[in-house]
Length: 326
Image (cartoon, one colour):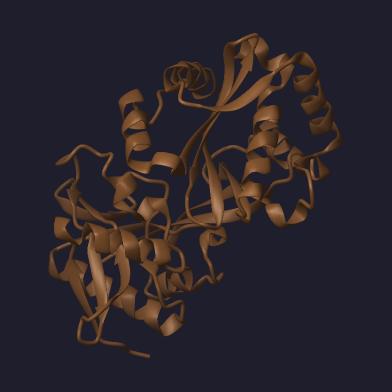
């Protein structure tokens, strides 16, 4: 099973090669690409991205975004370090190839004095050819599952014509209510209004602050272009709700943030937004819409959130968090 791989640290001159590889990889996503990762201010993280080559090093077979953190005198390697997931994006989905990548990674990190490794792998919906080879290879190398989160996903193969086919009766009523009330949904560039609604939503739901600043969102929009879409709902020209979505790869759209003004909740604007988003995803031949994580092993079960996501057709897939002490 052993394969000889050459491992090399990424340099800025490799940016186009890296991004091109990720876009054609079996499981590559924007969270592996520098079109996303470059929104971080330069120097904020001790980045240590790695590229793996087979045999004589003629062509890339895998890449992994990494950053190194000094925590209580120990060096911790994390992938991702400022994204939803990381791990290897790979071209060859055969188990032997992926097993060799993990082996090469651990040998390299041990050589440079890393004490522990943390990896979050993409849900399998983002694979062109579905497999759990990376997850199994991590476990075979001694990684433990530190957390398992359930991400809610709408399989678009269930929709023949209109998303309401898979909506619950209650979700269909809510959509009719939004339409009858005159809620208008459109793709917008009004990030300022959306961010204000999002701040209010995060504060009321979680009592905290947003992971990304307004400037982060604007920079991401510049970097990602049409792969980042803002769906906004308006009532009498007033913005009342929004969903920020990423075209993560050719497989799936990700609803990254959603927010609504509670003063207009009775109009059910999110039902109208997700109906439009699902319509667009079907139109553009995506296979899934990822509604984001709904619960994890170390947090409570949000019954209302489960009910809402399942009411518009979602089912659960794992997003796993792995750790290893070297």
